[in-house]
Amino acid sequence: MWIAELSSRTEVPVATIKYYLREGLLPAGQAVGATRARYDESHVRRLRLIRALVGAGGLSLARVRGVLAEVDEESSELHEVLGAAHGALIPDAVPASPESLQRVDQLVANHGWRVHSGSPDRALLAGALDALEKLGYHLDDELLESYAAAAKQVADADVAHLPADDRARTVEAAVVVTALGGPVLLALRRLAQQDASARRYGSAHFDK
Amino acid sequence: MWIAELSSRTEVPVATIKYYLREGLLPAGQAVGATRARYDESHVRRLRLIRALVGAGGLSLARVRGVLAEVDEESSELHEVLGAAHGALIPDAVPASPESLQRVDQLVANHGWRVHSGSPDRALLAGALDALEKLGYHLDDELLESYAAAAKQVADADVAHLPADDRARTVEAAVVVTALGGPVLLALRRLAQQDASARRYGSAHFDK
Image (cartoon, rainbow over the protein chains, first blue to last red):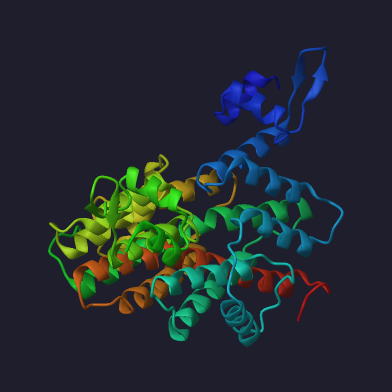
């Protein structure tokens, strides 16, 4: 298909598609003459993925580029790629205290979780605990365990629902579910917080 | 204290503090002469909150301003303020389909959750479900229920741990726990996903 059809199929403006092509986020089409190129279903799929990661996923284009590089990486072992894609998905880690890092390592060990040695999530988690601590909010062990149990429940369901038919689809699905499942989980948490707050603090101003 | 001490207490550079003052994120100190002002513990606390929301919370300054305005709002009922602070914390909602909006309303009704009628979380959740759907990933009822159950578990623990001593502290705590607890929950989910993926797809390249 020509770029105009690619645009109407995906609802992404032609100028934006050209920008993604220039930035290397979208692979070039098959050149037909000097100025035209033909695109296929892989371009439709890739454009939809970019838009979902930027839109509902809230990722910057720089971060989307990193994630796509991991999705396209074919040399390494499947599970390694999932870990690397995780690394590209998350915000830059903030410096964390040795105490919080140790607390995170202990939690991971207590649960027997096998995690990537280079996973930035440990530092990210420790940094968030530090930030809470600095503000005088100690996330005590009981509350942290509630978080861990809930996280495990969601993660098990996530991974059980991944397709197992082919490698590229599995990696893409893992990235999509991690990136877009995050906003789903946090929105549900806020809705449930509103209900818990209504029960604890009471109010007549509700919809029901 | 003078601005230099405020800076050293909070580890925020003087230039950044002046920027926050100009932008109205930080209330002015008590003027002493034409060019100097004295600051107190409330400024220390507010600066730490701004830094935590920007740093570990990942919020833009514009969004931090909205959140602080809600924290400072003293006229409305406590639970209303918590809802409004939620609204300021979340990303701009994406347009959602009527089908997904109805699915979200049904989920909220099934759980008997009392949520704010104007809560943008419903549209945000529906938009994330749409984005997944567009990419061919239907979050089926079973998986969505796993998310909702996990979200409820965390939300109940969050609200049970809020201080109840005074209104300003409760609102600030709700904002902090919602904003910084999000990264904690998502980091734990990614770590647990790595473990679930290791169990499902196997690999020798692990730490433990």
